[in-house]
Image 1 (spheres, helix red, strand yellow):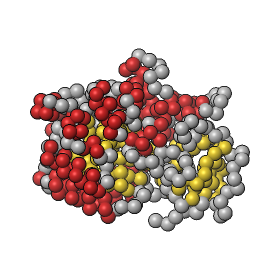
Image 2: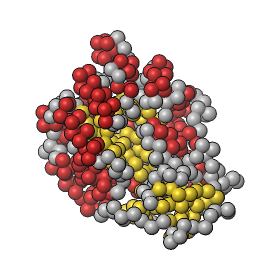
Image 3: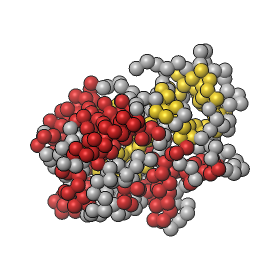
Image 4: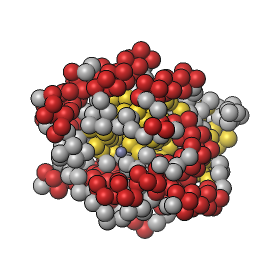
Length: 437
Ligand SMILES: [Zn+2]
């Protein structure tokens, strides 16, 4: 990939998502070699770098949003089996279609879903699905940064054995070592679908190769019961006993974590991907976000897959996370606007173990999103910092106009510069019709 020239972005407001949650109004962001080279209030900014293009953007600049848990290739299954209870939804609608999915279908679904995410201001997504190499190919086509959890399952024969899946994931990880656009991780679906032997092999591979582990934990109230009956431990305690929490782990959902589970996750630096929209749609429950964060757990607010949510709009999930946390605790101070924004930027990056992402800070990757402030819902502003509240409570991903990933402008004035959206959507429509059988 060619390196874009140095760039200075000037905006009415810049919220770098630093520790103080500053808003520089007006502010600037300098970009060089795909990294943030400087950020701050425009008054007192150093001269732009030699040869830099200076773009007077107006609007609000934020770090690109992160999606901490998704199965984006499932765009090809969106809308399927609406209203069926979970077991019938899987058996009658999802599994028969998934059995007909080819690797190329997975890439096409990923490309379209990645395009949707970029248009929604998401610049990094943490994935888990079959055919990891095709997930990465679809992401690359759209120009999104991807963390690709290679599914590890003891299931359909055509996906091979868990040992084979792990070997493939390790090979992909090594082949792409140092590639800033894609990281391969291990994606054992859950402790209730993957046996102890395979989980131990995941642990060994993760520790030997420095790979992260992406796994579903405590999504529903009853899913952990077989593990508890067999081992006498909750799923998080069982994962600790297996040594899996020695690795960098991101646990999706965490709706039914006990206080001891949360303390365990906090001690081991396990990140949790909170998926309020998916949990609401499937009536799984309301995750204890405040308690998790008080236990020292980094939380990423995420979409889950588009077959069960159904859009890939992280900002709308941030608003849901606020609403749910406040309703759960009956306390309007349970979670604040800044918390919600951290959980889709800097804290999400920490949950994913990626300190190169999630903030506009010198040395981090230049993933930037611009929101237009032209619509009436962004006023009035007594204080520039109020723009963050307006963004979360009144704004929406519809206000995203421009997106840079590693300094590359992938959305310009509301349009993708990378792929033909109509063609990508047509391709997915054809796949959906074919796999419906
Ligand atoms: Zn999931």
